[in-house]
Structure formats: structure tokens, C-alpha cells
Length: 229
Image (cartoon, rainbow, N blue to C red; front, side, top):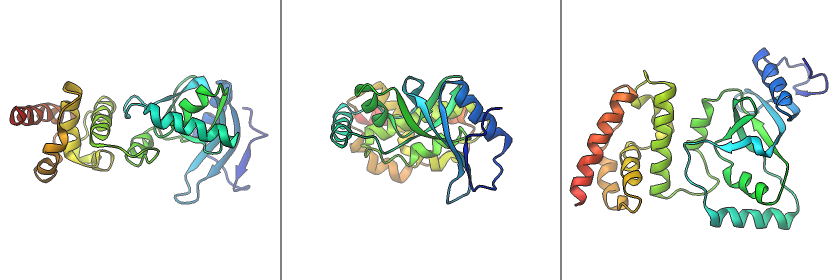
């Protein structure tokens, strides 16, 4: 396997075989591995790399792009005449990477005709769901957050259908985001802020497996919809 030129930190560290294999896949995808290192908090192994920009896309679960924020970010990058903030990615498949928190930066680089994007590649794809909950690239409003959570819910339901809804309290943050997400999908102009204060107090996470919980969420959304009419 190629990799003799990869910087490794700490110097005497031994990255797991899976991480080295992932680094090889990056280069096979046409990217360049710059370093393999342990991050300073939990000491998890990560990869710093340059990827072809066309291979990086947002996760399908997160909120929609804000054109206003993307334009402002693009103007700042252009004024600095440099890109200084790598995006976090996970590898979804050959030549396909998802970023859970860098879509606006990715879009800005795309509009500026960049060919590559610096990334921090995480070996564990499931961490992407946790990062979505911590995404501070642009503050969410209630609608954006609810739509992001219901999309995330479906992604987790497909990936881990046996797990309970309450197992993902960190990722979902608030139970009522799931319920409101269904309503915002059905009615983009739904007045969720009217119901949120009450739902925050009474809507709790379910112990049911995700597919069963999804059905219950549909029932709860129906009750809120009826109360709104």
C-alpha cells in the first residue's frame, strides 16, 4: 500500500489497519492524504486530506443550503483570497464523500471554481449524525432544525432499524423536532413556532424501535395538525 510519504502524528504512533486502508482509498479516489493523526481530545485517528471537490456532497439529512449565507461566505473567502477552514467528511462509497457540517463552504468553493477541498476525514461514518447535532456553521431556525432531524431519523431508521428512538437523543436533541419535521415536510409554511412551547413539554422520546416510533410520530403529527385547524 502506498503511504510512505504520509505524515503520521504522533511519529511513533501506529494507525489502525482500517485507517490506513481508508487512506489508501482516498488516494485511489484521486485525493491526496496529507497526514494521519490522533485528534487532541479523544485521541481518535483522523485523516487530513485534499479531495476532488466534485466528490464531496452534503449528507442527505441536513437542512437546505441558505443562498444568503453561502454568498456571504463566498465573498469572505474571495476577499481573503484563501480557504482556511477544512470541512469534515465521511466516505460513503468509492469517490463519494459526505460532509455533515461543511455544505456552505463546499458550495462557496464550487462557485469560486476550486478543484479540490481540504477535509478532515473521519473513519467512523456514524459520527456524522453526531456532528449534525453540533453543526454551528449557520444557526438553525425551528423549521430547518425539524427538517434536518426528520431526515436524520429516516437515515438512522434505514441504517439501524432495531435501535430505539431514545437511543438517539443526542442526535435528535428534542423529541418535538421529529414531530414537527413531518409537518414541515407536508406544510412548508406550517406555524410550528405556535405549537413548539407546548410540544417541548409534552412530546418525549419513545422507547420503540425506530420503524415503530416513526408510525407513532405520524400519529402525533396528525394530532398537532388537527389542533392547528
